[in-house]
Each structure stands twice: as C-alpha cells, then as structure tokens.
Image (tube, rainbow, N blue to C red):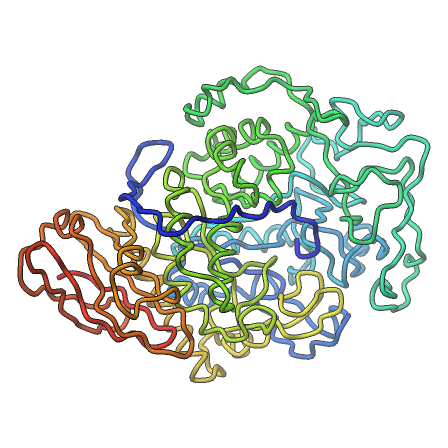
Length: 622
C-alpha cells in the first residue's frame, strides 16, 4: 500500500569493513536450488492501458483501464524474453471500486471509504472473485483471468497474486463464495469488542464516522456522486485496518479497510496454541501435521480456504501484504496448508522488521521476505549520492544464514521510481545497483513494470502522488506505453536511451536465471580493495560468485560522473579456492563482452580496470 504507516524499523548503523566468509546457499528443504528466479510485478489494471489522456481523477471512460486480455501472447513472450520466471499480477482480487457494476450484481461502493477513482487493491471486497475493471465482459471476469493464468503458463512463467490477510474492505461482500463459505463477519457477535471466532474487532455502542478530510481532500476529486456525502453506515464501528480503535479514524489511517481478528485479544495476548520452539527447524509437512485437528480461530480457516481456492485455480504462489501484522502461528498454519496443496508454491511476504525475519521464515514457513530496510535502503542512499558502498558487506554478513530468503528489488508499487526527481532523477543511476542487487545472493530478484524503460512516475493522477506509479487511479504509464506501442509490445516508441536501458535489464536478468555461479558461493572483495587499492573508493563495490564450473568477478561503479581506474585485487584465499596458477587468465564480461586479463603471481592476483560512470562488469573466468 502506498499511503500507510509501515511500522518499519530503522536499520541499525552498519559497521564498516566486515570481513565476509564465503556464504553457502541455504534452504529449508536442504535440496539444491537450481537457479535464481526473477519476479516481474505488473500493476494489472495499468499494464495494458493504451489511453494517454491521464486526466487527474479521470473516470474509467476518460482515462481507460487495462484488461486481462491485454496480456497477449506477444506481451507475455516479451516479458518472458526479458528474463522473467514469475509474473506477479498485482491487484487481481475484487476490491472496492467506484465504477458502477450493479448491472452485474455487484453492489456500489461508497466513495467516502474508497481511495481514488479506481480504489485501493488492498481493500479487497470479494476474495473469490477478480476485479471487474479488468474484464472485457465483467460477467465472465473469472474466466478471463483463468485464461490469463493459462497463457502465462504456456509461455513458461508462473503466476503470483496478492492476499492481504491483515484487513479487508469496509464493505466486504462475497458473490462467488464456494458452497458453505460465509462472508467475513457474517457470524460475528457484534455486541463485544472481541471474541475468538469473530472475524472483526468492534467498538460496541459507537457508529463509524468518516475521517475528517485533510488539506481540502474530497472523494473523487469533488465530482458529484450520490453516495459521497461524508457518511458510511457501519454500526457498531469496526477497528480500522492499521489497528486504529477509533470509531472515527484519522485520514491517514487505512480507513477504507477493517482489521481482521486472528485470535489476538485487544491486550495483545493470544487465543491459540503457540508453536513449540523446536518447530523452527521442522519443514512445512511437520507444521501441517501440527495444526491438523487443532481448533483455530475462524479467520485462520477463511484465509486458508481462500489460498487453497486460488492454488487449485492454477495460481502458483502469493505475495502477502503487511505479513508482520498477523501472528507467526497463523503463517505456519496458512503456509503449510498451501505447501501441502502445492509443494512448489512461491510464498513472498512484505515484512519490514529485521528482528522478525527468521521467525517468519522458519516458524512462519515463508519462502521469501522483502529485503527492504537493509539492502534496498542502502542501495537507495548510494544511488542518491549520500550512501556508501562500505555499508553493503555487513548486510550480507548479517543475513548470510537466510540470504536465499531475502528477495531483492529496486522498485515496487510502494516505492518511488528510480527515475523520479524525488529518488535519483535518472533511471541509469539504478544500473550498478541492479547489478549488485541481482547478483549478490541466491535470492530472487523483482522488477516493477516500467522500471526497465525508466518510468519516472511523474504525473498527477489524483489520489496517487507523483514519484510513484498510482495504484488508486485510472491512469496510463507513459514510458511503459511507449514500449507497449499501442499493443504491439515492440518498444517502437522508446527513445534510444530507453531501448538501451531495457537491453541492459534483458542482458542482466537472462544471465541471472542461467548462471550456476549465482546459486553457489559468495565473497566480497570490496573491503580488501578499500584498504589496499589506490583510487578504489566508496562509490565502487566488488564481489565474487562461483560454483564448480563458473567463476565470476563483479565490479560496479555507482559514480554518475567519474570514471574509476584501479588495479583490482583478488584475495589470496580466493586464488587458492579457485586453484589459479601463476600467469594470465582471460576474463570476459557476460553483459557486453569486454575482455581483460587477470594476472596471478605468487598467489596474488589483480586486474587493471577502467570503469565508466554507472558501469558494471560481470567478468567470467574462462
């Protein structure tokens, strides 16, 4: 979610120059990891929109909307050819919208509790249906999404969608529930604040009040709507999605949503069985067995059933929104159920508290967590010109036991676009960071649609703010639209710089999913060169990756103005590990083909480099 308090803990000040030992890949099953994965996040209703009107607060008729069918065979082929293995279709479950779909049996939503013209994808209204905006025929919207899943699979990629367990839309109304499935709150005792099997928390005796607007905000930009009257009927009021217990939440609370009760009492104590401590070391099958035949809160069952529904539908995995606001024991129950249905399911969670990472991975059975507050934030500061590459080694050292589980990214729907003035102001400043982020570990890499062509998110969309591509409005994405080229998906309208940027991403990502070394060992060589190499400074970063059959040396220059020239030193222990004999060894850059010699003499090794501004080399030892 773009506008939300994220409960992000500020990363501790990282010590400099930590000597890093080679890191072995790690996963819970102890089975070899075959390759890196690349997740391509698309904001589904924006991806295929060719309308370029982009009127602030524009309606669906004025600004247009992308459809499931816009992901044509040609579009999916181009995504696949970029080096993508998973497509995360963001915003698929039916969320609260303002557009009138009553002709299809869908009730209207009140603009006073909807953010933007198009609504927040994280205010889900019906978990067993998909967003009607994205269907050519809303009556057949589930069939159209099923066809998209099948097309994606046909092109050799897997499918992820969102599940948002912490909260749902204020007006939840299931229209496609499987037999016997009741809506959230249908059986709640609303006379009490809390009961174990209530799906929501209540404020007995008080009715919900719409938040007081801030800075003159008006729903729909002030356009007339019969339901937009500053009132919403909810009696008794429910707790708001971010945990506010006020009948009238603040404007900056997640007022469009209500919080789900997982058996956590208002005082924070739990009404469910805790996992035994040794279950951190047990696999998903053991966790599934632990919860079998145990009584759990009703909300646990509802969300498990939702996940199994979509798994059986053909979805290959999930991204869980704000997972740390839900107890770890629920995740053990939820994820072990998913893995029981599909052992290969890809499970990704938005978690921002480094102190909880290992609990969510080992107890909660998450496959991957966002590496946001450590690697992403550090790389962002370096791209902006005020961070130091000296801070990177300690991050990898601190995460080495869970490095495979920490998904890397430079953009997503919550974060600013690299090219925006508020971030780095130039998409090319992301190139060295992308090399480091993609190649430094065995973890998956994520790319946000439009990132590969330098989309800056510069437009005023209405509710959504510039520097981020809006997730609340009907809108077009200009740089992405130039690549889309009216549905040809051939990059026909891109500038030469945009084409070159996309080519860089294509080269890097395709290498990453085929390289054996990237699933092997890691050693940073930055610290040695910072202390012993002249002209090697805090704008440069270097490391080695290797396997039995492939050996890589990676060097990136984050400086956007100055060429760096230095004699890069390779540690003696790495020379020994790689069994390098005295003499010259040919290195070839896998990105653009530059060749250079690695000179070994008496156990010491070095290579002389001229690295242009924002240039990276990924040298392979032949």
